[in-house]
Length: 359
Image 1: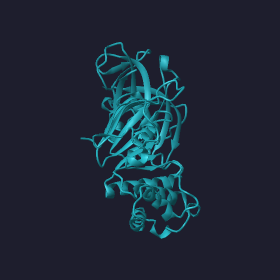
Image 2 (image 1 turned 90 degrees about the horizontal axis):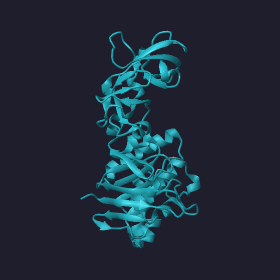
Image 3 (image 1 turned 135 degrees about the vertical axis):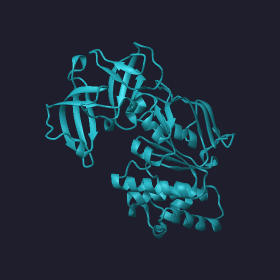
Image 4 (image 1 turned 180 degrees about the vertical axis):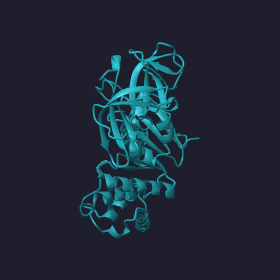
């Protein structure tokens, strides 16, 4: 049995044009790190608030260890919560902030000090116990918020965009810190973010949200290598897209007669509207031997980005002439010598590294 079972969950806000969460079902295993990933307004934070008990569902069920909890108040659900804004009390010391959940739960005073000390040691902040939040860096404040969520030893920790206010370097450091905590404590973590990099770094599984529904639930590698649809392909990593119709055998035909081969995500009848997606690292300058998926392009720009070149091209020919822009990620040694904007460049890709989706 899964630790958390969400079944047909729905949330409609008064006056809302559409449900914030729409018939959502999800099972979360004990000890799992699962990320709810999606753009703003996709329903991921609302789902987290429903789990935490800060919002009531319009319909559907949430079970923890098989017991319904949708009618329980937040403090009776046994879940730690870390908010985007940290929500630390400015007039309290670090130790007092961390102790607060224990006091709410009426833990005996004799036990509080040792639990606070242990929680602060877990996040490596024991030496700052007597400081106030204003005396801490953003990363230190976030660690205090984590300690406060962990101090009463919850089975589940919910995190709502906890790293979004940090700069890039600090955000990456905190990702490693959260990975360490999850590995050492074995606690179930549910993490909300719009940042695909965070999701790929932290998660055992990722649920990709869109319009209140889950588009795909899979491991980070599965999402990247085998996206379920164009939305997931575009949201996880970079992608080049081209519209046309299916030829009935895993290929795409464009209005100008261009024919390309790819892996079909689902069977498609000939003539059905389709979209081909290929990631930029799989697009390369064509070799003389390339006969399949050979594209005539014009170079728009070549930008050096440290470990690779970003080569921007326009597809030539017929209906696509000058209208479709793709880009490739090329290793420094793979860039054709003397490449200049306006130059013709034949590009190609392996059919097994491209996906064909129903449009």
